[in-house]
Image (cartoon, rainbow, N blue to C red; front, side, top):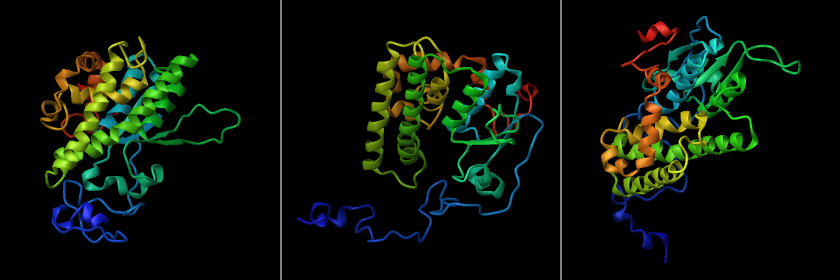
Length: 293
């Protein structure tokens, strides 16, 4: 039996579609981000990044991945780490800002968030100069280690925190690029794709619900960068703050322990500030606490 016998082309979407032997990009695929998606990397235009007065220069957008880092900065400042002051500059990914030469120099992968630390804590073995950090989990870990905060120092606590941090980085693409894309952003509704990723999203919520049934936070009694990484995706989904009516579609109220945890994080003042940063309906640029006024 050939592959075409098992999967007749007339039943494909669109009908008659058969993958070519070698994929080539010939046209935009449709959907919200079709105008900027390309199969190549690198800068597409010259554009220098703005620079403010603080040690940390953050270039981001108020998406779940961007919120992780602004929440971390606001939590550090709330905890009294004055050295965590930062400038947050809006990178509008719908307009292709992430493909400017300045941003690509900081993050060759052209994804938000990206950070430049102009006052890193260097050792004698380190080369002088600013440090660039990209990938949201890498930024969280970098800041936690720099300030000695929100990352347990004991072996078990630290390892558990990193376990859940890496779980989020591996799982969220199924929620965002998978379920969220096909449920909200794709140019057509595909039952197979939505069912596939809805099933995985619910499985992940069940993983969290079972864990949080026995832990106040992701790592026991300790609020950590694991919570900051996971909440903008799964906590906000549980609170029905993302993906339109996806919360109803996924029956998020069934996950009572996730609901408890999500509300606990949502009530934190630093979180309330952090989710406003780099949003056109919030604080487009953040340069001081006064911007929230």
